[in-house]
Length: 366
Image (cartoon, rainbow, N blue to C red; front, side):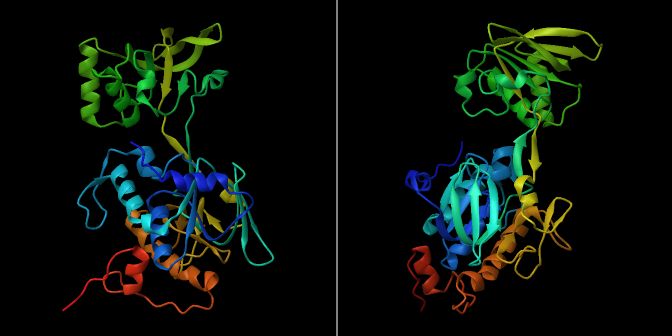
């Protein structure tokens, strides 16, 4: 289940006319981007958040929303979805505005020191700082390379299941050998409101990258004739009256067979793309942004990079490392956003000022 965002915040984002003037723009709404909202909020900096996905959560929600994460401090176990929901609740006091389903396409330094930012949907900003928390880049599904097939995307070809009910009662062909392919195959075979008429799983080999329990369950269902598994690759399709009627599947024996279908679901995973960020003039090393470890600034002052997208000596790609980087990046941005302010480290436990910012009552100590 995707996290819900305040509708008023989304409406504000959509309705704004002309460039939005702001202190901070965060590129990426994964866990690190969301925590960057928090660290900026403690310093009374309001942020606008942009993400290419249609919902917050980034890689954990897109790739493993229901898989357990064990290395978040003080949380013995949580799923990617639970972590995202908790972060969204944590940042509520700071009123960040989200601009989802769009990529940053333009970043230009202005004469006054600010940055002009524009997205693929035409949303424009004038911002003092930019925080790139884009993980390993914008995620795009790895597509099935069959000539002419792309015209059916969104009608009979899907790379993601948004509403399982849309596929109930249909003859499904599911392609892939990872967790997503197996999980959805099992989901649509199971009795319930989303049960498909038939499910055929296709994978190029008889080995899987999915959880062993899921593979065992799939084989059990095949033995019970509840579903089918075919070793092979989709190499073409048949159509009639502008609709796909079947997938051409070439097996390991070199023979091509036609598998009838209503819907083709393809789960080849997601491919990270650095995308337009590669053209912003930042110092890049192996598709990652080089930063200092004092304030996590990139090679352009005013642009910071936190989380998996950055690199520095000793870098470890962990969510908790990204959280640490967010704190230092926020403090590093203060001289740019509020050059006249002296910044002191305060603690949320004892600071009445931070309690006010967070909207909580200050405790009384004896």
